[in-house]
Image (cartoon, rainbow over the protein chains, first blue to last red):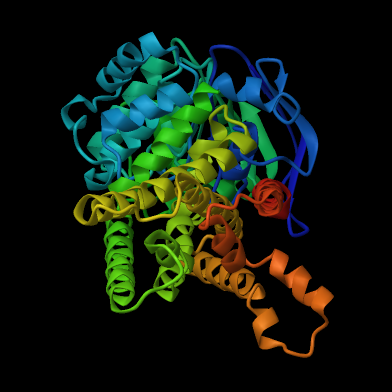
Length: 273
Length: 251
């Protein structure tokens, strides 16, 4: 579904991402894990067709994202970081506008908008002005927007950032369900999120891919690798960034990783062993 | 084309979501209403060799309000989208850059036309109450409103260009206000500089919106200004399109 070859992006000479190579197959839920400033958002913006790369190629569903941008963009639903929305429109009105913009046939707009409202749980705020919505609802409206035209691929940039634990759980649940019909690429800097939702993980750090595997294999690798390895150092940074603790004591593998990654129950963020 | 209409209808509606539209409408109606009142009371005092409609479209009041409304209409077009980040969902939807640029321009143009509709009633009311036509001929109405449309298109495209350059609405407004004022006063240079040759004076006269309005509001439809304003609008919109695309390689 996604094919990325030697993708590089420089901002004023400084490389944000360097020679990224990866593929995401149909039906996969791919997690993009890395600390802040690792190049996750840059990669996603390039894949979503918002900005071109300095060099390299990327294609979505066989369409080159630079040369056949329009075809590629019709096949993906993108939810940007912080979910910018027109704050002066009402939820239904916004979704109808977006549906028309994304080329949903006129007679299907009402049906599609109804469906995504139901799916993302924004039915009870459908008549509200977006500017008056809470962060959690805005996030859901953004997700509903990404789903409107039934895209093959969903690109979600930090879909759970800024939500309360309850909302995080709901959004994760939603993403898990969506993963049954869609290919999803989602980014996060919180490790447990990837474990819970993704079938494969790419770990990116300072613009380079450090690892790419299933969450289980990665955990195995981490267990084997030395404490001073780069992965460990990075995960420490990530856990500090998240500043959260996660209740997953029931799973022995997770407990081990939590210990390794330094997530104590209260998230002190040290790489303890 | 459907996407263009979708974008256009949002642009037009978005004017009326914000208080700016109503403030501009009220301000403009007030100034043009006062202008109309003054022109009639002035004409009541002595015989003048021009019609009410000619006087209305050529007064200082009119031009003052005219130059001021463009920055207000156009400043938010692109700058607001850049500032709020809504440009990201917009440009990752399957729309082309020119569709976005044109929809913003025509959205502003529709609002601009809405702004002018009430002034047509002034002349109707004048005719109804006095029993005399406000203009010398039907062509004079057409001429002045055509001129309004043409100059409006040009100045709006200048405003679009100013707005695409920055994410700050105030900066966009200042750039477009300065540019439009300079363009407007270019036509007045011939009255200020006395030692210029007549050729230069003629040349500057071609750019004078004042002079164009003078001719058109008498009902004389000259094709030269039509070509000038239409081609300048196309140039400015092309520049806007280029500047809009430049965000892709600028970063």
